[in-house]
Length: 399
Image 1: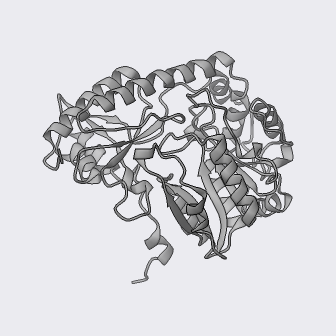
Image 2: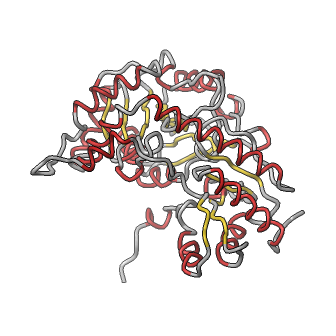
Image 3: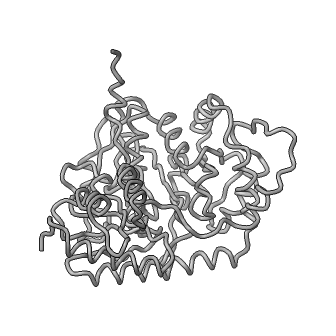
């Protein structure tokens, strides 16, 4: 019998989705599951995008250009201007979600065996994309006790060797909700410049920043314009996860030309998705403000509620719509599975993502979970009550 590839063996299971069979089984038993495990917003997609979807007037659903429709890319330049990011349409390549943008960035900029420094915990699929490209993730630890702030520059430099090619950040961060400060971004800039590295910057959560501190994009960092590859997506800001539209953005023409080869090989990004995304750029300021205000309220509800549960600690996330919480349990993965397979409270249970799946360091995050506050406040309040009861009942509780 033929063997599967070493790459497939190395590929990690998604910490966000791998408990899905247990959730399905719980639902089949009649248990209501509060899904706190995945960043799927429940807020409505802009009417402008939905109207295009409902009224597509085409006789042929054709291929689009490999780099995406020019009309969409030109409109995106005006969107980025609002964040003081100055681009030409040719700096933007439309991808099948932010995921494809990360993968194509790795494939275009890295050789097999090259290393990428990534603060951990980190979005788990970065590891999957690195494995696909034959690259190696080298993690630098951040801690829940320090609110997931970046460590000193010396710890970064200790990881840099002749195979180091890039630093990858997610800002605001998934899974922690951390927002990098100007000092931290300047620290990264100086490292990128000193060692001539790529800076891959995933900035899909820029609309969700809950502090008066300014949003510092990698594109704001002077002196490394040719090193920056920005990753973006409409999935979160417009509740359009399913249309699979992202973007890879760089001023580096050589990188863009390389990325285009991979874009041409996969032919084109989704046609209908681009039509919806382009129309969504016309969404009103009121739409964005209502979405933002809702997440502000949800964040307060969740973080206050978590920190009132005995033994639970969550720092206050300053961006995105996630937090990593420390629980009084022996093993968060066992606890999350137990919640789905063996526990219910008044016909309800909770589904969370074990945080160990966002770390590569063995044993790290064993007592932590990532929680997405993508449910309405009434559901969050009830989910917190269910979580409290689960922790009181769980046989592996540590305090």
